[in-house]
Structure formats: structure tokens, C-alpha cells
Image (cartoon, rainbow, N blue to C red; front, side, top):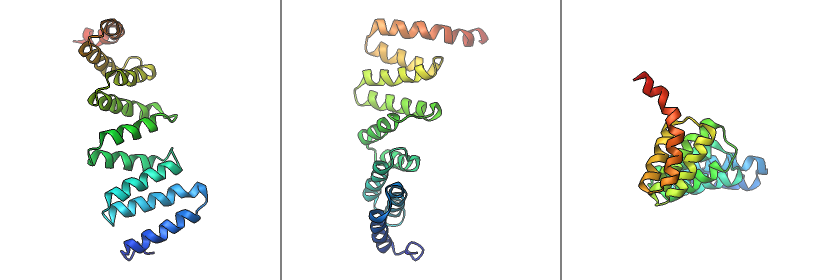
Length: 171
């Protein structure tokens, strides 16, 4: 009701009271409303980040909370927090379609943070789910070549050759 009348602070206060009274199963949904109100109507991005993070604390599998937090961390250029959120998400049992893009993103963030071994591990997780993923193999080779990890590079190359040969025959 308060939101319809653009009374953001009153709506926020009412929702904050509601989250305290809500049963545990409903707290994440109310917290999502609080975060959205902070972001969209009150234009308080920091409160929105805190709200979405709290929604994830209430319900770690909440896709809407993760997506919003992911978006805000990207907008705010906070790679450390983004990586932490992605790693938390990856700790859940995800479908391969959701997991693979997050693993690529985590690998890139780890590499940017100076963690090539952690990036390598994320790429290996992709290859465990999709052994013939050419992009993961190519990135793994690049990482290992840059790190002068020759035995590991030889392993990646030996796995890439059979995958790349069908596309080479087409050319």
C-alpha cells in the first residue's frame, strides 16, 4: 500500500517490521522487497546490496537475490564481492547451464585477482561437466602457458587435440 503512494521510507519501515514477523520460510521474499525498494525507489544502492545479501542469507538458493546482487556488484565494480557471491552460488548444486557461465566468470575474476591456479580449477570444473568444451580447453592452455606450467599444459593440449580435430577437418 505504501509503495503505491510513493511513501518509500514508510514502506521500508513496514517491510522491516514484516520481515521480523514473517515465518523463516517467508523472510527471503520480504527481504527481496526491501532490497528492491531501497534500490528502485529510495535509490540507496548500498542498502539494496545489504538487502539482497540478507535475502541470500535467509535463502541461499534464491536466484532473484543472487541475480540482483551480481548485477549490483558489476555496476559498482566490486570484483572481490562479486567473486565471493559467485563462489557461494557455485557451492550449491546447480544445473550445468547455470554453473558453466558462472565458472567462466569466476575463472576470469580469479585470473584478474592474480589467482591463476584458482582460475585453472574453475576451468577444470567446466571440463568435468563438459569434457569437449573448446573454450575452456583454450583458456586452460593459455593460463598454463602463461604460468609456464609445462606438464599441465601438455595435459591440456592432449585433451584439446581430439576435440579440435573434427573442426580442423571441416576447414
